[in-house]
Length: 504
Ligand code: ME8
Image (cartoon, rainbow, N blue to C red; front, side):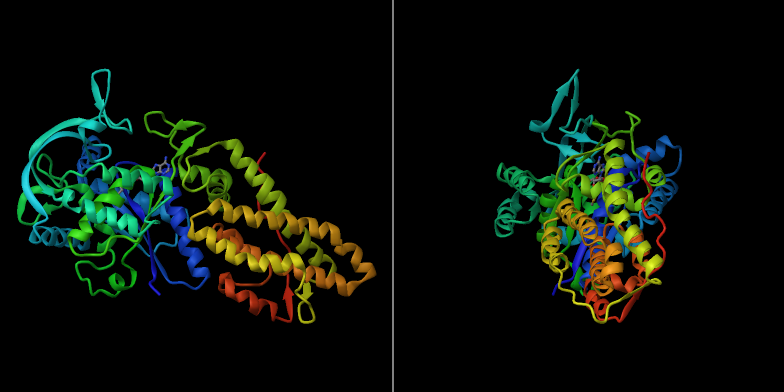
């Protein structure tokens, strides 16, 4: 089976990482960890996009030379990976030699295949999005010109190489028709398909009026367009231009997880570049929605940028991870509000999950000498069987990027387990039927372990702590291991500390 290759966008180093960047990276972390749990090999790539006019401008404003500036800001993104407990396999920077070599080789292939020609660009450009803007997409306000994202445009007139994008229109439509899941969600698929259908123009792929970028190998007066440079990162990291590299063979084509702002670059330009170079287009583009802060667009000028570090300090990492993916369906826009994160933490993590573990395990520690016998137990309680069988449904949710549904199902079962504990009342059975009590507790413990394994991709640190309470190490995050656990003679239980702090 082809191993999966998941990528985040490589982030611009013009500024510090914020909650939006954290969100995309966390989603890929969840995917990577999930597939590891089901013993499927995958590769998780993230990194930084360091060239172009926007980054050059930011370095200039900071009065630092671009390379030093990008070294510094890129480090912030690396730190974000540690802060978020990301399990990425590689972190690529576009200023690295391996990438420079790959982009120049990619360009040479395109030029050799006559996919690139020299001409002149005259039109509007958004530095913020590093995007050329067609006349019919310009919005005029107070005598100024903007693109549909509200970025101000500047007029550019310069000699430029063009990529024969128009030639690839038919092949792109075919790619879409043959792969109905090429972009998820479907609304985005339809939008982009319509954009392609409406006609593609050749794309300007080099600039001459600034310096910060990779040079066109055959004409060093030209800097390769930052998006052609940036998109190539996905194959540079797999060893391109060596297409016999074991990682390229094993992992390409990839699945690109992106915000809805950059779908067109990934779903139109990138597959066209690849097909033109004789390489396979990506397998899938997964586009998530946009986060706002208490109802407002997040922007530096509004001063409402959410720093992931502060958020984690306030609520805890796994609490934030849980909230972001439980609160909003992945393809939809979402609003960050202090009230909603508090409600999720208090109601679901503390009162439901945390409380279940606390009361069941404390009871076992206090009354049963920290032990629960498994050897004679029948694991045939209805609720337990349903929990075991959830795996199929959860797998479907992950395959469709329905992270919120995945979590919702699990929390319905945690709730059901809490009710089950009340109904079975092990504290009463202790006096009347100790065997039944052991059986009930064993079924509950194994159910908790099972649901904890399912939750591991979302809350890796907390769930590992919970498994430790059962004396189970990290190897027991593999979903298969539940059978080995059920075959154990007994579970030794450690005294739980409160797992999720309630927020006042
Ligand atoms: O576009 N809500 O980099 P970038 C959700 N370098 N996600 C958000 C967000 C928000 N409010 N703000 C940012 C670039 N994001 C290019 C990519 S890839 C070859 C080159 C996330 O630093 C989201 O994933 O502007 C979005 O697509 C990405 O950050 C943009 O990051």
